Image (cartoon, rainbow, N blue to C red; front, side, top):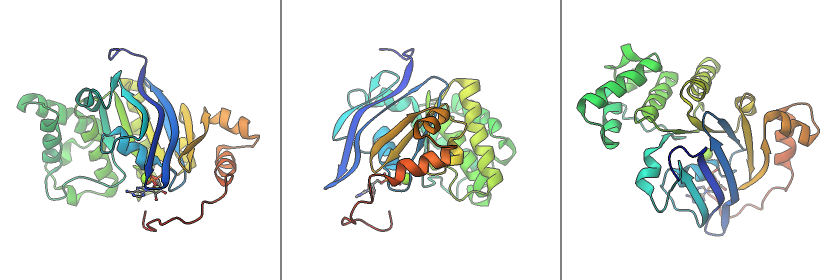
Length: 258
Ligand code: ADP
Ligand code: MG
């Protein structure tokens, strides 16, 4: 398979447990070029666990993950070169400038001096942050820090962008701007996006929604298909219906801070 393969990301029957706790149970999904897929699920659904598998931090217990046709276990370097990630927890160095944070990332991806500077400038420009490039990240608002993370994720021109609860802690205006920026990347550059969130309104405009609950995919389709399938009026009601069923698990020996 080559990079031209239609599915940019394929998750096939993936499982992951923490001890006796099944965090992901036979999860499958695909993302095509230019597609915005919302991974919608309440806290504890397994969204971040899936991101850890997609970013190569953990290895799945079973199943397969392939990015642009490259299996993440057999060809991790090629697979990981094609994804960009914004993790749930911010990972910028607050005391470095915006530009130096991005340059560091560019070098990690093997970009040399002039190429790195060109790519960093282009992505900061795309986020409207060119004039803030010499500022310390610490001096930026929460919304702008998230945009810096988005710019960094795009520096090496990935085909797939993974965003994990990227709007947590942002005010409504910054939330909407970030979401618009990412929809724009799908439309203008054909990037395939996996947008993880527990907020239903962030999934309204998605091409497809994958609804994850207690480690399993409970429903998958366009927002309209999910609403029709649940026989309700809107996505919020569909989400409520699909995530209340199955009952609560008894409290296992879980860390309440997760
Ligand atoms: P989400 O991102 O959807 O909130 P997570 O992937 O963080 O969900 O968590 C899924 C489940 O796995 C939860 O029950 C959580 O408590 C558990 N979990 C996550 N990370 C760990 C870990 N490192 N060790 C043990 N359990 C974990
Ligand atoms: Mg999470």
